[in-house]
Every structure is written in structure tokens, then in C-alpha cells.
Image (cartoon, rainbow, N blue to C red; front, side, top):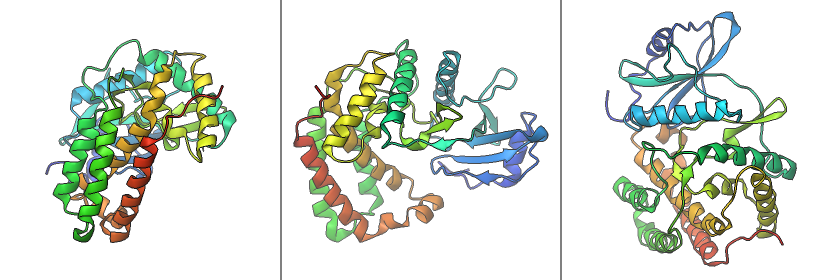
Length: 324
């Protein structure tokens, strides 16, 4: 099995892995939308629905994955709605033919609406409850949100990929370096806690009348605002209203350091650059070439140059503040 590869992950191997924990699929395997890992939904005996996730080889260590699972169990024990892994014989992480995998109950639900202030109010309280648990200890195995990983390492992956068109290289890397420098100036002296880490609308579901977190795969140490800012959208005034709704609800359960508001634009810049580096790093995976084909088009890089220029301007603006 080659590094980071799923080439040997055949349907037979997947079914054998599932059966190794005494669960027997009675349906076919429905591939779910996941590029980093391989995730499948199926129906087992008795009509129970499950999701099996195979972790990308060599991305996380066993200790790092287990720490993610333990965080989910802590949240569930505190009655914070989260889809936690299934335990079998006292374990939640399993290995078969060199692949690490875990099983979850399949949870259906409707999508979260980021432009709905009532739903943002509910979400703010939910994140506050999650962080109330998160602040009780630190991760010791999971990584931390840093400029090294999100900016410098991402740039290296981009350079190694040679995907930036030659005619756009100077323009792209010039603005990239300016955004990196400005972000590093602003992202300093950060107090971090355990985070969901990838708290966007796709990882939140309405299950019945309750909101529920899914997918802690990117959980790590970082500033509390990291789990809030991705809910902001629209113009500045709209974002101010959204932010005010989220933070006021959050503070019903957990203290919030308002000085972290100045980290929103640096974190947005870090996510933009990290995303490009992530796709570049995974470009040898046929699934990425197939699903991100536009990543090799000149037009995409022209758009990124414009987006980085806009982000540089945003970094130079006054940070968002809560409404008076």
C-alpha cells in the first residue's frame, strides 16, 4: 500500500473489515462525500444503518485518532449532541489489512441554514456547550492551528505541485506572500482550546428538533473563534449581526474572549491558503484530479489572485466588533 493511498481498499476488503467487528452488511455500500477519507453508508442486520470511515493512511496516528474519539465521547457524556463512534469490545478504532477504520450510527437530518438568525442562536449555545467541555483539558496528540502548517507548509505544497500556471506564478506568489506576511503579523499570542476544527454548515445537522455535530476529523487545538467564524457570510453589516447572535448565545454557557474577534480575518486567510495547499498535496490521488479538475485551470488561479487581493484588503480593515 503506497503512502496516503486507498488503491487497495476494495469492496471486499471493506466488507471484511466491517464483519471483523461482527456487523454484517445487508445492503450495498453507498459512498458519501469525503475526499480526505473514504466513507460509506450501509444497512446491516435488523435494518440498522451505519457509516464506516476508513482513515487516509499516514494522515493521523492511532493516538491522534483515539484522542478525537475520546473528545466525542466526552461531549456525548456531557449531553452535547454529537455523532460519536460505535464501541465494540471496548474499542472504537479498528484495523484491517493495514487500514484504520471506525463505525458510526447513520444519522439523518436536515441542513443547517447559515443565514437564519434563529438557527445561529441555537448553534451559538451548542458551540458554547461544546467549548465548556473542551476547556477542561488540552489535546496532547492532536495538532494546533499554526501559521507554520496553514501558511508556510501549504505554500511549499503549492510550489512542489507545479500547478500554478507559469504565466501567473509571479502574480500569484507575490500576493500570496503579502497575505502570509500580514496574517503572521496578526495571528500572535493565541490562547487555544480543543476545537471541532471544521465547524461549517456541512458538519452540522438538524436531527429532529436538535442540532448535532458530525465529523470531528479535523479537531485540534486553536482559538475558540475558529469554531464560530465560518458561520459568517454576506456583507460586513450582515456579519456583525450574525456574530452578535452567535457570541451572545455562546456566552450563556462559556466565557468568550472578545479580543479573539481580531483573529477572524487571519483565520479566513489561513483557511484559504491551507485549502489550496491541501488540494495540491493530494493531487496524486485520482479522486482529487477527478473532483477538483478546475484546480489545474488558469481561470481558477486568476480567481485566487483576485480572492487573495480581497483578503489582503480585509486584513487591513478594522476587525469586526459586537454590536453596541
